[in-house]
Image (cartoon, rainbow, N blue to C red; front, side):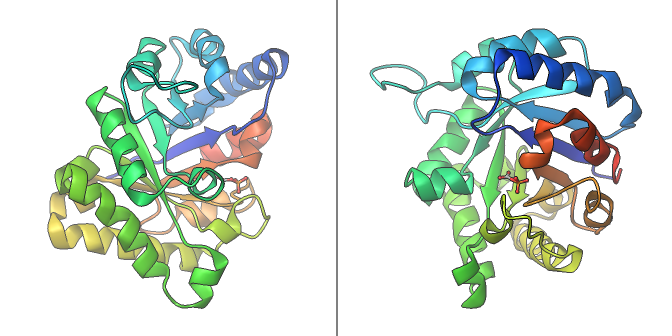
Amino acid sequence: MRQTLVAGNWKLNGSQESIKTLVSGILAGVGDTGNNQVAVCPPFIYIPQVAELVRGSKVALGSQDICDQDAGAFTGEVSGPMLREFGCRYAIVGHSERRALYAEDDEFTARKFAAARNNGLTPILCVGETLDEREQGITEDVVARQLDAVIALEGIAALGEAVIAYEPVWAIGTGKTASPQQAQDVHAFIRGKLAGLDQAVADKVQVLYGGSVKGSNAAELFAMQDIDGGLIGGASLNAEDFLAICKAGG
Ligand code: PGA
C-alpha cells in the first residue's frame, strides 16, 4: 500500500516572518495527518530557517530545484550536496515553470533528476501537458516523452526511488483542477507505462497530482486508485488550507 504524500511548493513566496508563522501553523496541526507524509519546499534561501523549525517533526524538507552539477563555476546555482547539508530529503525537478519560463528541457531535467539521486535526495519529477497539447490529444505522448528522458539516463529502477508529480500545466495556479477522472486517467497511463518496464517500480512509485488542489477537492482526488497525494502550490501558503489537504486521503 502506497502512502499518501502531500508536498507544498511555496514557489517564490515568503519572508522570514511569514515563514515562521506558516511553519508553526503547520506544526501545530500536523499531528492529525495520520500516516500521510508531509513535505514543504521553500525557496532556497529559507531552507536553513525551515530546517531548524521542522527539526524533529514529521514535516520533511525539499527544494524546488537543484543544479545538475555538484560544485564548480556555476554562478547562481544550488547543488545536491548543499541541499543535503541542510537536511533536504526531496528535490523537485522539471516543474512546468522551470520548463516553460527557464527553458529547461527533458534532458536537462533528467540530469537534475540524476543529481538529486546521486546526493541521496528523492527527486519529485514533474510531468504534464499544456492546454494546447491536451486539445491536440497528445497528453500521453508528452508525459511519455518526459518520463522517457529520465528512464534513458537513469534506468527504470531509478523511478522506483523517486516521486512523480502529474501536473497538467493548464491547471497550475489557474483555479482549474483536472477532474478526479481526468487526473486518474493520466496517472493510470503513467503507472501502466512503468509497469510495462518493471511491475515492482510501478507498484511502488508515488504519483502525486498537482494543479489547483484545495482542501475542498483533495479528498476526491486522493481517493482515486493511482493518485498518491499532491504537489500543492497556492494552497500550501496557508497553514489551515495546507493541513486540510494533508489530512485528505490516506
Ligand atoms: P497550484 O500549483 O497548486 O498553485 O496550482 C501547483 C504546482 O505548481 O505545483
